[in-house]
Length: 146
Image 1 (spheres, rainbow, N blue to C red):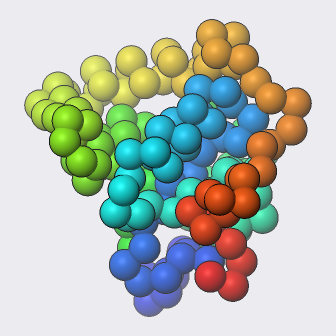
Image 2: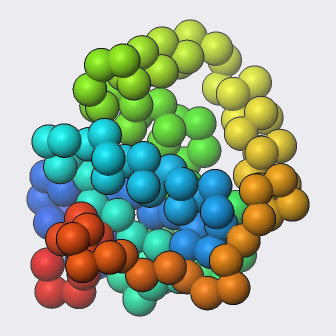
Image 3: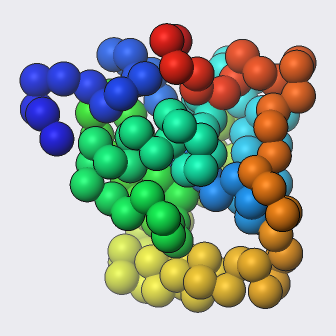
């Protein structure tokens, strides 16, 4: 990671959410963000996409097995419950109320997050392949060259 540059495919000021593109729960989260992020604050990328893989490598994170959602704000990386709560505080009312959960100690929040993340395929299912954005949502996804 180079402190003077931004992760690949991310421009200064962009906020990017990396999610597991084959996880049904994670895809539901991405659809939720598309629906409720009316100001279009967030770009999305699956961890399986070339852009997602490049970002994971830039941060030195595993590219073959990734058990958390990641949120990048500028150069800063947030994972697990911190990522969810940072995103929630930027969503419109009433979703931003989720940010108050930051009062719960991170160790407890992350323990709960990990229980769900580690069992997400069993609990919610998985797609055989990473879903591609529909044409009307394509601009919401991070793309090489953007």
